[in-house]
Amino acid sequence: MSNASRWVLIKRLAEITGYSENAVRHKIKGGVWIEGRIWRKAPDGRIFVNLGEFERWVESDALVKAF
Image (cartoon, rainbow, N blue to C red; front, side, top):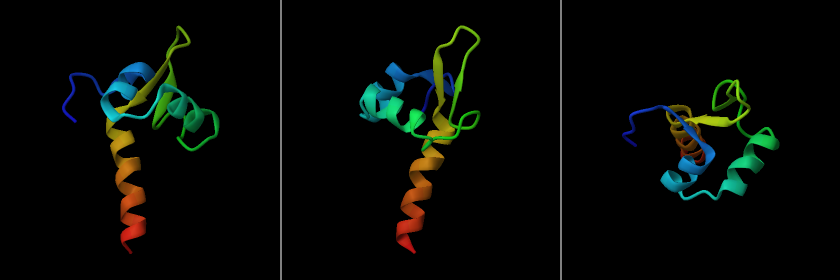
């Protein structure tokens, strides 16, 4: 994924990845994604997701299943 910013709002992540906004919020709320690494809350309270760390998360699951 080539993007100007590595931190994107949930809505943009949903557009890029195909995950619904609800699915993203569920992963955040359920602790699947680590705060400060994959996601963080901005000073205004909006949640941003790090695209690079999201990609690492996706690839890590694939690597585990490959072995």
